[in-house]
Every structure is written in structure tokens, then in C-alpha cells.
Image (cartoon, rainbow, N blue to C red; front, side, top):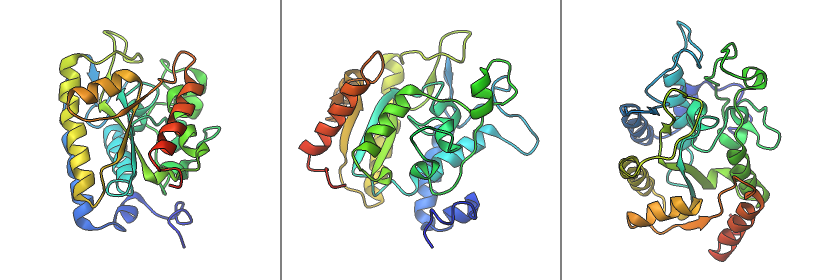
Length: 266
């Protein structure tokens, strides 16, 4: 029986027990390191909880749920993924509540129109946004958050016939920068935040190699992400950002990059 067939049976603890204990410890250590960060006008999805926006209950820790979500996502990909797709920062409609870069809650809940929950992880993950928060729209309360850029990035992978487990999604600044007084907004990370974020990205790449992976093809969501990585000595192919009418250009650029680098048969 495959992991996908077990998805409704396995708990999170049973799922991670499938993996080598050293691998689990390293991935958990990385996520725990992420959870320790705190910054001005920045929400840390793995270390902080906003009770006005998130589920609050005695038996539910939203930050812990997001840590578990990220661990479950990274475990089967680190050491395996051939392609890393890197955006600029966590968005409020995506990783802010899912805990996974460029991934929205509706994907986790199998409520997305095109991306299945099993494409993200073999086990079902939980939402953390509150279905009763007055700050959320009706559809967000009912089905969780949906993010257009996340949809385009994931769809490009699936449409190209690439196994989602051969790709790893990330953000250079892996936290959610927002505008003052409005946590449900996105803000461009400062240069200092980008430099700080690079330390996490660099460690993620090191961990990938430590776990048996090869140097991945680096694709940047937007030229700005490519320029930021280039500033730190990491070469990446810059793709047109999907926002502002760039969805089709992103898809085409992604397909061209995959084919030109010999990854068409992933």
C-alpha cells in the first residue's frame, strides 16, 4: 500500500516515523530554528499566533500545526528535489496560514480547483485560519485562504507533468512581512530582511545536500528574487512573476527553463 493510500489512516507522528530518525531530526531542527525569529512588521508563521485571525483552542496550537505542516512537506523533498522554486517572501494568503511556501490552505484541505492535497504531502494537513474570524471573508472562513500566485506556480508544475515531490518551494525571506496595522497585507521585504532570509535559504540548500540531494535547478519567481539570490552568489533563472497579468508568461518561462536544463522527464 502506498503512502497516498494510507493518507487517511496515518497520523502525523506515524507518518514521520516512516523516515530515518536522523533526517527527521535535521528537518525538525531547521523548522525549530525558523520558529525562533521575531521581527518588526513581520509575522513568523511557525513561532507566532494572532488570535484575531487564527484558530485558538486548548488542544490547538496554530504555530505548532504550521511547524508540523512544513516538516511533513520538507521530509519527502529534501535530498530528492531536482528543482527549487524560490519567491520573495511569504504571502498572507499562502504560507502565512499554511506554513508552507507558495502554498495556500485550500490545497491542504483538498478544496483547491486544480491542486490536490496529496500533491503537497501524503497525509492530510490542517488549516490554521479561523473559520469564525470577522476579519476573513466568507469564502475564506468556509474554505480557508486561496492565493493566485500559489495556484499559478503549482499549476505550472503539474501541467508540465513533473512529480510535485521533485520540486521544493521556498521564499528567500521565509516569513510574512506586512504593512503597519494590517496583518492581512503583503510588504516587500527590506534589504536587511533579504540578507537575513538568505541565511535560512542557504541552510536549506546545505540540508538538501546533506540528505543526499544534488545541486538543484534554481528558479526564481520574479526577477527581483533572481537578483536577490544573485547578490549572494547563487545563480537562478528569473521567471516572470505571475501577478499583474503575468501568469501565462510565468508558465511558459517555467516550461522553457525545465526543458532547456534537461529536466523535461522528471
